[in-house]
Length: 264
Image (tube, rainbow, N blue to C red):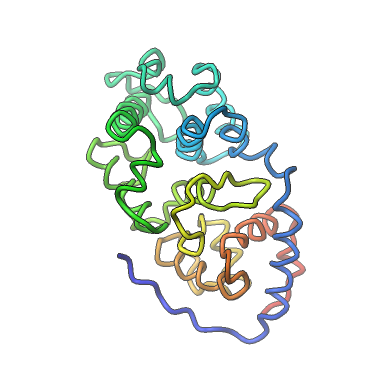
């Protein structure tokens, strides 16, 4: 288990907390779904297919949003909307081969995508679903992220799935948010056995910079230690649901609210 760093409180955080609560309510709405990769699993039919679609969509959510949404859409379209069945049946082999080193998207060559889908198919065959795999390996958010990294590392799937939790594992943490949080117009809430208070905020360099500016983080580096530290701070503002703050941090980057935010 990773050690969670203690991040001491700073003065003047009441205004920051009020800002984050307002933005969280503003952005966690059904309208959020249209331009977010979560739209793909939300449109999928059946819980197991939703899990699989979500995992693939999260894995590809890197870089330019319009570009990765298009790439996720290619896979969903090729599967006929049944990413789970397509993965198990090997339909992905028409798109991805082990010996094809050409680029599918950014840092993901087609050879790595082939390894990713082959491993995902193995996990699904061995366990029946991603949820069953997750339930067998951990009972909390961090432990599940660690287990997913380990399982896919064995097959050489990086960088489609991170090798370990040295990085912030943003895409896996986002996938976990989708799977665990209930009562949301955005997230799916399929994995009821995991306490949402054990989730880790999806942290990338832009969110880290925003959090640093607001006094929520000392470091701007998107590491797992930083993500855990930021999650602790968000838990002070949203005690029962720290990742509600993820929507607020997203909002800071979208509407420029950070420029008007009080400095702690």
